[in-house]
Amino acid sequence: MARAQGGSRSALEALLRGHYDRVHAVCRRMTGNDSDAADAAQEALIAIARGLPRFDGRSRFSTWAYRIAVNASIDELRRRDRTRASSLDDPRIAALPRAMDLPGPGPGDPESSAERLDVDAALLRLPPTFRAAVVLRDLCDLDYDEIALVLALPPGTVRSRIARGRSTLARLLSPAGSET
Image: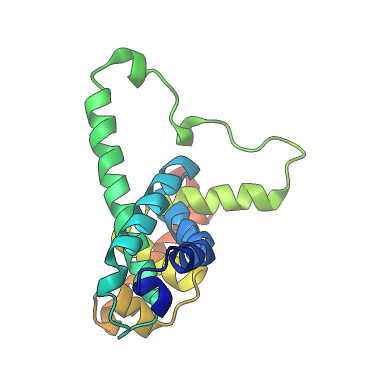
C-alpha cells in the first residue's frame, strides 16, 4: 500500500489486481449484468488509482475500495438508465431484447445457476440503497460498522436497509412473489 501511494507502478498494479475480483463482484451484483459490471469495475479501479494518494488509512483499504465500487456501480446504473431512455426513441434499439427478457437456463442446466439468476433478478428489483447494503453484507461479508463506513450511514440505518432489503428479496424469491 505504502509503495503504491509512493508512486510505485508495480505496487499499484499488484494492489489493483489483488482487489479486482472483489470490486467486480460488488459491481456485478449492483448492476445485474457482466457488461455494466465490467464498466463499473474499470471506473472503480481508475478512481482507486487516482484517489490512492488521498487515502488516509482511517478505514481498511478494502472498505474504501467497496465504497468506490458501490458508487461506480450506481453511476453506471444512472448512465445505463439515461442511455436506455434516450434509445427508446429509436425503434431499432427499442426492439432489441433486454437481458431480463432473455430466456433463463434450460433443462439440464445446474439448478444453482438458475437460483443465481433468480437472486440477481430479484436484487435488480431492489432500490439501489437496499441493494448496496445487502450486497455488502451478504456477498462481501462486511460487518455493520464497515458497511456504515462504506455507505456513509449510521449503523442503525444500515441494519434497517439490510432487514428491509432481505425481506423484499425473500418476498420476490417466493413462488407467490415471482408473479408480481
